[in-house]
Length: 437
Image (cartoon, rainbow, N blue to C red; front, top):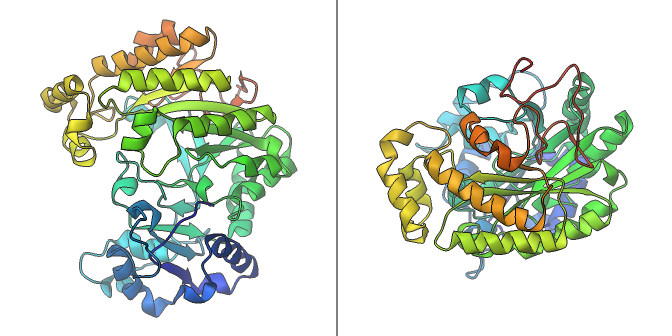
């Protein structure tokens, strides 16, 4: 686990009523050096008070002056609701201080999304190319301070479901059984870094054991920025793991992704995992074109490929926001001046465009730079652009060397270890195509 220094620790009373959840809680608190007696036990009656504390940043529990804000976020341990109708929390929400988001009450009560199906229709609507897939999550919030991320920049707490044995049996197991076409499942959480809480949390152990129970062709995907992933090599069902790292340049990590390990630390973690026989992959995602980004990413590509031969390398320029949001999260003086000017001039053109704020021409320049750097060292590693438009894919198809209808990416549902696609009659295409072409 990350050595966090939370300003407060909250434990919903239901956690202490469950033996396995309590054992998990004790493991995690022991790793943080926090006695259980220091935590605040939360009841239905005290949820409004706790919600107010969470929104104010917690209490004066244990926040040293030298700790960054993202390291001191309050931790909330709850029991995730796994089935049944969503409860009506309006009366409880009405007792909270004015302005308290309903989401805070929901999180305290264990209303954390259990799984998400990325449907073809959503990507077609957003004009993006990706794979249809199921994903899993038991947490909300992150211990990193990535400036492009709303939770990274502004998050106040991290909430975790603690009933993981029940979660794997009631959520993971049925989805795996009902979707035999999907071979790889990402445990990504919701705006969070679930890997930062392993191995004490134990979700990857339970989920990979479930894969082993159901057969040899199912895998769980670790998608992370962490460098401490050696625990995965000790898991009994470790062969059912595919490990994907989001990576960037050294200056980008320091400036844009505070709290994350530097790229070389991530590459070394990848090297150790690959040396142990694990399938590893890299994503330059999201790429924020700060001043000097070309040199920064050229050095990162070289450092990566000196250590590892990933199954694939992906790229995504920062998107999902407009120009005003980008400038509110990242100091404009840090950005490449040429690209910043283009963003400002293209605000009207990119308004409401999911791949904004950078226009296509800028994104293509950035992708081509990364492609050129990779091809200096490898002519055949599969390359792809993640959640990009069909138009960008069309422009880059020859340089990427992959077909956007069925490409090998980092966390695709049929992207098997060894660089193979497990396409079947039940599942043949990415969201770009619905019929043969």
